[in-house]
Amino acid sequence: MEDKLEQFIDEIIDAKQLPGMNEQVKAQLRTDLLVQLEDQINAALVNALSPDKVEQLNDILDQDGVTDEQVRQFIDGSGVDSQRVAAQTMLRFRDLYLGR
Image (cartoon, rainbow, N blue to C red; front, side):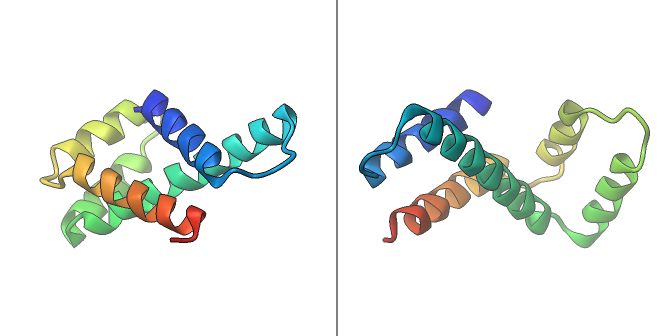
């Protein structure tokens, strides 16, 4: 998924056609946008959970040594269509970034 997000960010940066941007600035912009997008996807996934699933997720997150994979498995097993939520969030992110 990380590779797809990076590719998506590269595509919207290119679509924005920012003039005079050097590679260092582009790399920093890419990093910043990737963090913002991941945060928005994570927030959308949590918002899609039922209240009891949010409680269960909080219990998991409070455990020492919990991995991203364990969190991902929990969300995937929670009944949330994580791919749909991520895709919708990515579309909103793109539209906002490109000013559509």
